[in-house]
Every structure is written in structure tokens, then in C-alpha cells.
Image 1 (tube, protein in one colour):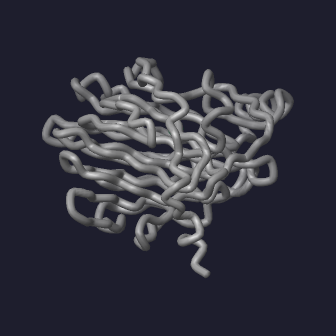
Image 2 (cartoon, rainbow, N blue to C red):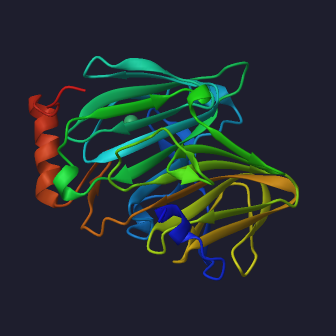
Image 3 (cartoon, helix red, strand yellow):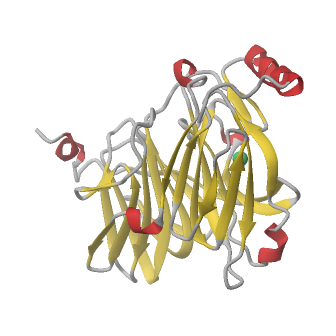
Length: 292
Ligand code: FE
């Protein structure tokens, strides 16, 4: 039997457990962005750690960017709507993440990189999602998966457009592969009044981040609008209905890891000792291990 079909159960619709407004934070070289969830919400979004929304009303505010900084123990997922991010790292990897593209970076044992936003025609914006790694995989070699806009398949039906970045939707499979949390990441655009239905495994963590328009989610028709994150309870089906003006949102689901989290800035491990070790290694120059 196709495992996908076993997820769909129209009577087991996920309720919305909470709706959080994205909050303003400063990161990198003083860049202002909005955070949908992060450390204060631990462990409710497990395996996801953080979601940042860096859509810019004033792209110049972002030019200082995110100069060289380390990561260990996590994956960072950058998904661009507009503009580009120029990326360079300690392993000699560099490139441009353009509009509609994704970079799924498994930091593993560690990389030191910089991420520098550049507006295109005055526009810049996108998202960064952090996905945790389990203890057994935190020190794996770094790995990149990068897909341009044309490599991300789209599912279309009346009033519904879904770009499938990871996982699958209605038989369309996203290009990102081999990720421990077996994540689903969808970019959903609904026309006014349209309905989105997506089957999930019951015990996956699932959330939606609204980034345009408004609508309702779940059997209780919870109202959501721009720059809000909604976390779903367990169940086998997610349902979203757009308001009259349509709705755009990211949808993500993944298997919880269920391990202790020790988090300091860009390093996320299981214990305080592992954090200390990481920051010692940064000071003595032994942080970067494997080849990318
Ligand atoms: Fe980074």
C-alpha cells in the first residue's frame, strides 16, 4: 500500500493549538527581522527550532547581512521569495540563493559561513527555518542541497498552487532528500475562497506561517493573517481555507526528535558540555571538521 494514502483520513483533521504573532528581533549585523518561533517556544515545534521571516519593507536595512558566523548541530533552510542571498563558507562553498530557490544546509559538525542579502529591483525577502538534528547525527559532515526556482515542482488545481520543497503533496515530490526529520516543506498560494487539504502522519509536528492575505485553519475555523504562525495538534489531515483576498503560507511538518536541547546562538547540541566544547573549538581554530 502507498504509505501516503494511509495518512489521509478526512475525519481526523488537525486542530490549531496556538497562533503566535511573529515578533521583531535583531540578528546578524543588526538586521531587523520577524521571528515566528524560536528558543522560548522549545520544545513545542520539535524538530523545528526557529523560523525567521526576513521580508523587507526597506531592503537597505538588510545590506549589513549576516557576516561570518558558525553553525553546529542543526540544519538551516533558506527559502527566498524575492531578491538574493550571497552565501560563502569556510569549506570554500559559495553561491547565490535567488528568488524561488531553497538552500537546505546540514551544518552537522560545523561550518562558518556568511549570508548577505541583496535586493533585486528594490525587493528582498524570504525565510530561514532551523531544523534540529538528533544526537547521533549532530556531528555528521556538512552537506548542502540547493535547488533553483525551476527545480522546485508545483502542484496546481483550481485556486491552489503548492510549491513542494521537501516531502510531497498530492503525488508531487520535492527535491530535498535524506533529511533525518523526514520533513515536509510547502509554499502554498490559495486564491480567494480556495481550500487546501494535506494528509499528515498523526504524530508529526506541523505548523503554517502566513505571509500574505488571511483565512481560517482547522475544524474550528481559527482566523489567521499575515506574519502569524499556527501550530497544529495531532491528526491525519490539515485543512486551510483562504479568505476573500486569498492566502499565502508556508506549511511544514516533521518527525519530533524528543531529545534535550542545549542552545547557544548558532549552535544547538544536547548538553551544556557539548556547547562549551563547540565554543572552545571556535576559539582554538578546530571547529570546522569535515569536507562539505
Ligand atoms: Fe547562518
